[in-house]
Amino acid sequence: MTDEKEFIQQLLNPKTQNTAFQKLLSDYQKPLYSHIRNIVLDHEDANDVLQNTFVKVFQYLKNFKGESKLFSWMYRIATNEALTFLNQKAKLSGLTSEALQTKTIENLKSDVYFDGDEIQIKLQKAIITLPEKQQLVFKMKYFEELKYEEIAEILGTSVGALKASYHHAVKKIELYVTSN
Image 1 (cartoon, rainbow, N blue to C red):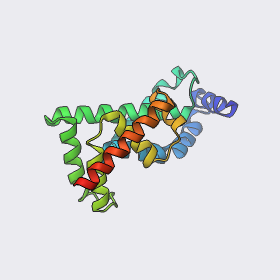
Image 2 (image 1 turned 60 degrees about the horizontal axis):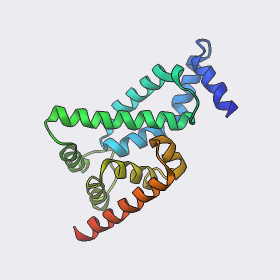
Image 3 (image 1 turned 45 degrees about the vertical axis):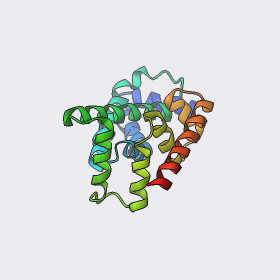
Image 4 (image 1 turned 135 degrees about the vertical axis):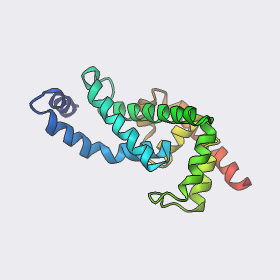
């Protein structure tokens, strides 16, 4: 943890800030992009949200108290940015969040950055039938292979609640996939 504290100090120090921020980008850009992409689904949207995430990280780093890992704090920002983005996009489109997600999934087939097949599309359709929290938990556990402890820290909830959410999500997805 002292390494992380030192790194945060480097990020805050104007003399070492640029080098430290480049390291932050190289270490976290890909995992945060994947996390955001799992939520917003669209490549261009994910890039926009990723950029906003790093702006917020840089902007609010001085307020980071170190009560969680830097990784968890950044993932929480990325999650909130992605959800806010989806809600704003839905509102601007005059659609519900679910309708927007359905539309986005239909557009995945023509997305050159999506390498999934019909089964992946069906899985995405099943996921959007879940409540928002179950979607997040399922995506973070299934696609990103995060540990329950990490997800709990990111989402600010207990491991037990996450396990229950994941279990319910898996059951609902199985039911959706076998009945459609």
